[in-house]
Length: 468
Image (cartoon, rainbow, N blue to C red; front, side, top):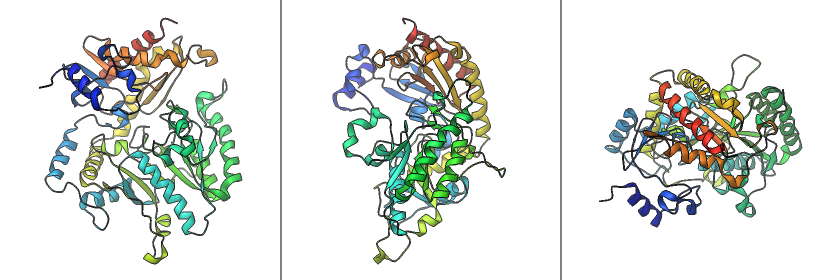
């Protein structure tokens, strides 16, 4: 029986191809650039390997486990659902978990999003939105609308449509010959703001690029797509919510759809249930309603794959017609509306109702900001930025001029390895994005655990930059 980390690592390396990984980095066991860590069990914020070493999951396992691992209510709900209905075709059939989930999501989402189309991962949710927007315009007699506008540095997934509207070269460049050619507009990324310029002023200034692009290309554009407030895979770059307000107004003026990709930032990560809720409005109540809202990750709190694209009734009605019209939306997945996944999502929404999690997220964000205070004056930290319970630390060779470290030095990787290994009691899973070390911990983390996590991360950053 396999019981050691080394044995499980060897067996994995023999046959498994891991995602988002140069597998050569894993070769060589303990001496690998990125040692492969086999996990035996998990609970709360903790992961545990086969030899009993524990790790704080500071990134919520790719931003999914918002209530920690194996939350009792989610576990019990899944066990109960498995005793009743595991899966059923969702074309021509329906079931209680999917119906109840759609009803609850419509009540929680920004007003006006009345229809839910289920898929099984974030990229698929984006594909649904892209295809649905294009198909809508075709159905209403505007087939010339075939293009999309997106932000530089954006990321929307790995399937070809989602990859096309992304811009992060690391993921996209290899496949460029296969992709649609969207109109990319400079990101409002506030890391690029001028000295002394406020986040809001910089964001407003950058919106001029988007306004010009929409005005010029509205006649051929289906939709604008963006990640509200935080460009996550692009290095946790952030911008002011006024951009969302201005964009909604511009899309309305020019007759262009707005797709909000909240796969990573939805379900409370920014301090409100949806990032779109932050957009300021002149009439008082904050928040904008996109034409499509893409959700996944936190939707099932890291238990099972599920995604949903919410849209407006007017868009739904453009597809609603007799069969011979040919207007039906024929996109499908084998596991669309899977009952187990829908039950996991319902259980996640149950947990949200148990307490004021948004207040907790904001409070934990304050603890995290305080716990990382030393990094704001670190000689190799260009910026510490935060939105809710996302905090990112931008490492740089010369912070004053924003000169980055050479990519080949892999400073972020050094911090990652140190945080995993160099503490006698436990490690911290950080998984930086290049030289951006970030935190996206589960909402159940306690203040003392925030302090411990931040302390090890600070030590790891010092270790990663000390030989410069």
